Picture 1: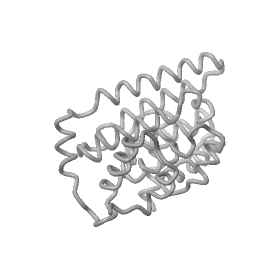
Picture 2 (picture 1 turned 90 degrees about the vertical axis):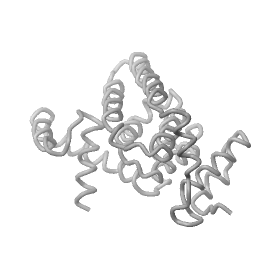
Picture 3 (picture 1 turned 120 degrees about the horizontal axis):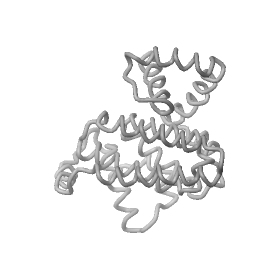
Picture 4 (picture 1 turned 180 degrees about the vertical axis):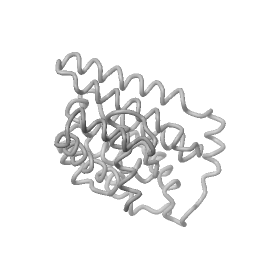
Length: 231
């Protein structure tokens, strides 16, 4: 739809260049065309549109191809991305686009740790505590841009150091931004059915509780979540 295209264009911009609202975005794009040219900008749009589509629809095969079937914990990474998508907090895609765009350059850091941290924060901050997603949109944009700058560094050792600094700072800030434990418990206790047996919030809590008891994510949990009910 037209609104979805506008959202993608803005998220593309927020993930690469600067934090802008819709109104000044057109001028920003025009200025960028002057500095890097149409061909490069169009290629960036095309490449990022594929990533945005992978994050917006259930396309695990495409995500697996991008991440790499031999990447450690690939199934858990894909499942974490799927959980984030079901939480319907699209602002997080600004940062996820940059991570996936540069996956081969950031995977040394432990991508499951990063994506799981984003997943856990989103569930805590937005899904349970009900905080507005636009509260963290600027934060995600800032880290996405810093990460892209780090990934553009030519020297491998300097690039890895810069990427590590961005991720370390992100994890620290996500922890600082969490609402109080009392607020989380209140929101958790108020978790109720929204759509009968297939309510995502309830199913997610049950899956995570099972993971906590077992100490690991089973193959069954990874592959069958969408068909799970709370019975």
